[in-house]
Image (cartoon, rainbow, N blue to C red; front, side):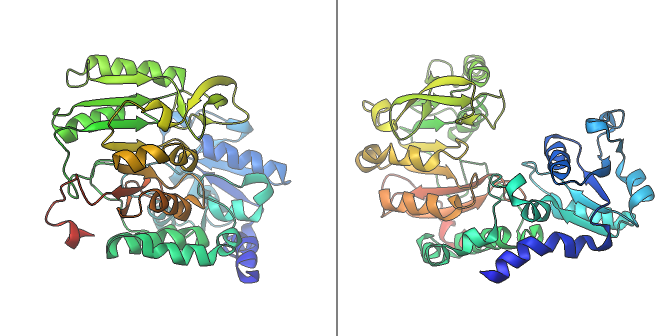
Length: 385
């Protein structure tokens, strides 16, 4: 434990070397500006932003110039540390590739934002799956035990790589993202003719379109939950504008969770909209056991920004009665990597658990639970997993 605490406290300083107080932030977007604010909270600052987007070069967020990566390295590559503050759901590349490109330009010191967050945990953490490594090690027995929940070598190896990422902040330990469709891994199992899909966190309807693609438009129905008002309007437009979905999808402007009630919601009109104590919008929250009482769901997906475990618990009776396939995100909090699969196993103990990374850098990690009856696997599933 002491080793982990020391690693978290010292990694940024060790890798930054003598440049630890002369910082270039790579990425002038939301995360980069979060890094700048956090630095200033800790009596540090940045000498510049670097960003590949030419549209950002005329801006000065926080009064700091935004330079092209080439110009930033020319000016500061030999005497500043570049903190990569770009963490987006991309299919390939990601932070390891950005680091290599900066080094190829001549940058001497490059670190991911994670190591800076570890240095100042009270300022930056927790942040999605990022938290102090010592917190993971405090539950080491549980983390090790849950490895055996997964079906197949591929899923178990992915779990171990994700544990390593949370312990080291080294993005190079990850393998490329799975190229199969997120939530609908067509190379693993087939859709059912009577598919009734429940989309929790339907956003703007992107996953509903993927569902229509996966089934070839041959499905019984779908129910889509989205609490964010702007996203809900976009979801309805998506459903209305697609002939495969129109008239067969019921949209519900509610959050899903443990129990029925009014909750605060941080409505952003983006994919990160979430139930939050600091939210400015009040929305209805319902457990799936109530919302789906008269439904026969065959497939339930959850991407609800950290509320997945409560929502699973609120669906316990439905899962026992209907035995649907599950696709549950497991990356919104550090411990969701092991706690989400554990809860899925408790609720559906005879199901196969599969783990798939659908984006680079730890984004869009999905745990699938597939019951032994009612879902046809592709013949290659055993080999591929």
